[in-house]
Image (cartoon, rainbow, N blue to C red):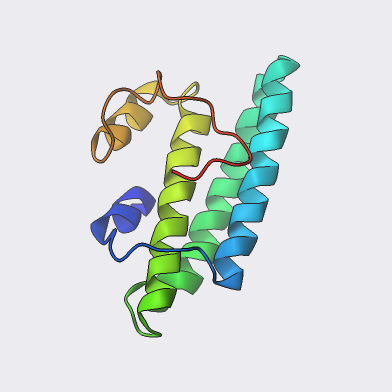
Length: 129
């Protein structure tokens, strides 16, 4: 459902300027850094646990807080920031979950990206969709 919500209205898109979006992206960058280290250290369970924790907080908190702004209730710039941030988060989370949930992530990836999530580059702290 989170992926459907993120993809149901991908426009407008623009700079991610809203504090809530920037905060979520900062936390996402920290997650990527932690998961990358876990994979390098062969701590796959740690990477999965961290990704799951972030995902549930993303769904429970961020998506709920951003809904009205996303629908344009607070202007186009806010909606554009929310849409862009959600797509960055979706892209990153799919790539982080792909080693653990190969079929589900491949299906969701195919809804909006070409190729396979399994051949996509590993996310970096600078990743932006």
